[in-house]
Image (cartoon, rainbow, N blue to C red; front, side, top):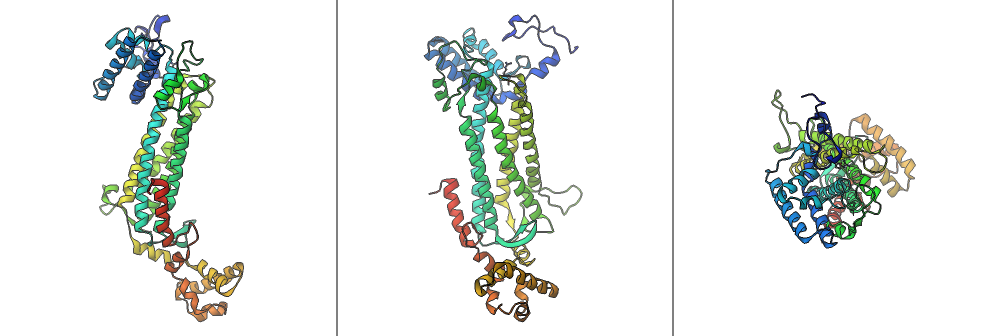
Length: 470
Ligand code: ARG
């Protein structure tokens, strides 16, 4: 068939002034049913609420209203059971459902679209979908925080080298490190909640762009569908996709966190570090190298961040040049949001699974934490506290002590006292109390610090703040 063949009949839903149907290419570029079928439940819920309102306002008869609700029941069952046959010729989910409704109940189906356009319909469906998704993301993030909190509690005392510039800096506890991610995912939940609050206004009733001449009750539909209020401006209602962008922006920041954690897992599992063993459930082997155990779930979670960022950038770029109100460009809003939502859900589930299963190799972490003169700051702090030395001077003295230890090839705690006193006679035997990594972490008791006692209290506090534990 030639791409310009237009022998098809015009679309029954809007083809009144059309002599013939679309070309085959037009049908393909125009159809969104391949992906917007995911909105079917929201589309049906929106139609039900709209029909109830039309009846309540006396715009639709009870009889027609009942026929519409019954027909939508049937369609819902047909789609859920996989019996529904979707047609690309009917473009999108809205017209597929309306056309089937007409087959089922006849003329009453045609009255459902009174005071409604696909423009306000799709904006409503999509808001409902993103709202549901945000609720699921919140549940997934809570589960992730729960897994991190359990591990943090178990490892409140486990010593890990803390890095800056990926160079050994000061010892920390693994529990403290994991709690950092609990905070990040907590802020992510806050961002999704903020997006949800702004999203929760009803577009329906805006019509194609200008409102409607029918005496509709938008406040009733808003309440029916769980929206806080109807959107205040009809042009904005049909052309706004901020909610989709905000969802993907929150998803992007969240995926940046997922990716940073994934990166740490990859590094921790490498031979050079040897800090962590992943379970068989989240690793793969190599088809050539029998000894390999690859952290694929972490690597893929890291990679999916790039995908989600791309989804956000894609829709921002679609939206940035659109004049008010609706343009068909906006049909391209759904695939990136679906992709971002699916990628996020999968990455969160994989991350939760890896955290639950991971086994820290505590002796390797402890040994690494002791290398690199990680308690040098403790020596400087001791000079300040015990000998009244100004911190800047203490910093210089400690640097000289570290240099001596380095020359001798020993750690700070192994350097003989007389060698230290040769650098500064104010150093006494007592200094050895602060030079071990255990003493170092135990001393970090300032609010938000890494001391094991802090970590245990922080776990309790985080369970209250994030998981609603009493
Ligand atoms: N499938 C369309 C979309 O997703 C529905 C709205 C169509 N509106 C129109 N004026 N053609 O954007």
